[in-house]
Length: 608
Image 1 (cartoon, rainbow, N blue to C red):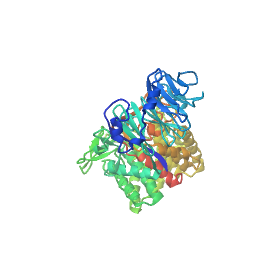
Image 2 (tube, rainbow, N blue to C red):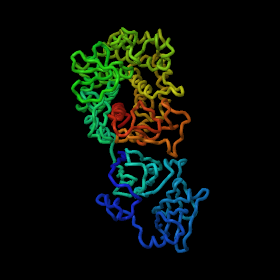
Image 3 (tube, one colour):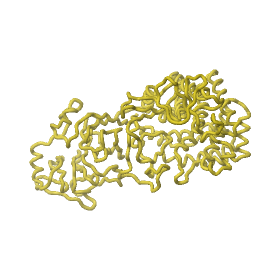
Image 4 (cartoon, one colour):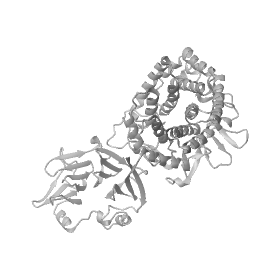
């Protein structure tokens, strides 16, 4: 079990911080008893008036002393009189104190424009700023929850301190807007957040990782499957998932392949016949990508029925032989990588005799097409597609293909190994060994992970692990594995700080080595339940160490990966160090990026 944080946005007119009789309280009174909300009291107000300062908030400590947040510092009123404590070195962060609360042991918590100060009332201070992990220092209000959580409302979202670790809630995934005005405690692990334009109910809910997978699968089946193809969908209205319309993307083949693998691992782990039906439906769709083109052995990027409502992507579209479909050409190496990956996993874990015959025939046609055309995919115009180029004349001799040499060498070796495994045709093993012995492909792939500044391609990282899995599982020759393992070790050590559960499990399954299971579990927990593409901005956070170098697309990056629930929505082909991203809520991810590592982890025993 793990705590899952969910947000329920509600409508409320803009306004100032709430008084006890504010409509904010009235709106939520049915959910939280009014008695649970703090009241001021005449005696407290009278004592606060003795301070020569503007009092913003006040709280009474266990000893009866009144502590006041003022525009001139921290006020204290007790039997000895009224005093003001101003900002100073190692003490109060700022005279601009916005809110105050006293916990059960008498610690005074203070919200300021420069962070959070904690005072024991006797001269000892603690300061929380970005250097101590507080994401946003401009704190406006705070809440000391009964379960030990400490919540801080800021000008750019909400921060929570739980179990010694800060979390950050901002953007439309969590809030109507980021200008937080007030926090109120609800029942159990619930907090109400008032912002300038509305309020949210944020709750922690216990859920197993399997329960999370079930919820993701239900959503995927409801909104992301069309004729067996799995992809993202567009939303006509921001955040309104009932307004979805299917897309036909450049990468329908790859995304569908990853879903097939997820359901295949689920079937192998659980023997759930629903998983087998789902995997078979999408495998039939994947095979259809090759059967509907006019070129034997040439899979389309995507296909759409002429009578379906779908958003097609740009590019070149052609009529299928039966006239009922349109298929998209210029198929990428991305698609081939996904096809061979899904073919071998489904073939080994799910397929019956009839399935195997169909897959065997398709694998043979596609591989024969590659062999007949110098390891390239040849499109309807008689020319190679843009990226599906794997031959030695290009990879070894053409400087323009330098950055693709390692990955594409890995890809074609993996594909040939899968083809031989599925068909048994010795020609594919002979071609595999020829590329290794005569063209240096095994040496090419050792350094396939690009680390050159400005050329780091996280999409290629995903494709490399898609190709590592089959070849590591199928290649048993220790002489060949020596260099394969050198390649995957170098790649994984570079990827390791990203806490990618899928990469970790591929590494563990393919090498038999330890693979950071705890970090993988943490990432699976952090992945948000809301997969809508909301804009998320982290570049202005105070707790982040910025990388001096930008990403491949000039995006700002952090030196370490943020918690996955605090980032914009992305698949494993995105940049996990990117700080800002997302959209306006008009798209939703299919969620297979969670299902695949979870069920793979279950199948291999990494997750029990």
